[in-house]
Image (cartoon, rainbow, N blue to C red; front, side, top):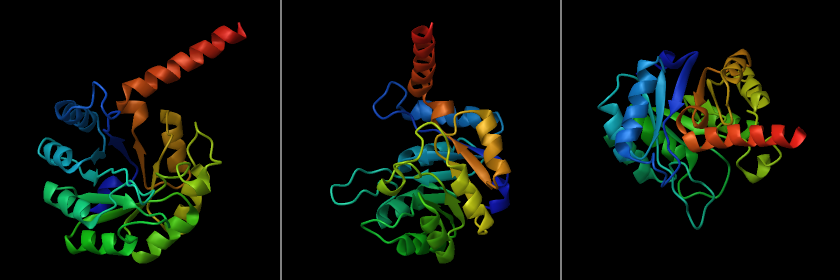
Length: 227
C-alpha cells in the first residue's frame, strides 16, 4: 500500500472488550465495515483470524496486531516473530508491534525486518520520545503513541487525555506519528492533527460500548453529587 493513504485519516480500532457480548468475529467485521463505509481511512484489528476476515470484507488498509499476556515480559502487542508471520499471512497491510525498550521475546529490529521482508509497513507502538526516536532510527514506517500512559515510565500521564506533547515531539523529529490512546472526542482527534499527527486512531470512543456507557454514567453521577 501507499503510506500516503493514511495521511490525515482516521483509523478505527475495532477491538471489543475481551469476552464481552461484542467480542465476536461477525461483530468485529460489522464494525469494521461500518467504519469503512463512514470514511475511515484504516482499521486496527487484533488477532490473525479477525484480520483475515476484515481484510476480506473491506477495501481500506488493515493494521494488524496480536495481543498476548506473557509471564516473562510486559510486552503485549505482537511480541513474537510468529505473530508477525501470522498477520502477514492474514493480509494485514501494516503490522504494529510494541516498540518500547523493555524485556521482550523478540527485538524491535527483528520484528521490523520480518515485516519489511514481506513488503508490509511497520508500525512501532511506543510510550516515550526515546522509544519513538529509536524506532524511527531503525526504519519503522509509522510511530504510534499507543503506549503512552501504559508503561511504568509513563504512569504519570493523565488517564483521560491523549499525550499530544509526545505527538508533537515525534512529529517535529520527522516521524509519521499515529496519535493513539485516550482520544475520546472529535475535537481531540482534530487537535492531534494540529499537533502534527500523520493519522489518528480511535478505539474505545467508537467501538467499545461498555467504556462509552461508563463515561456517561460517571459524568452523570458527578452531576448528581454536585447537585
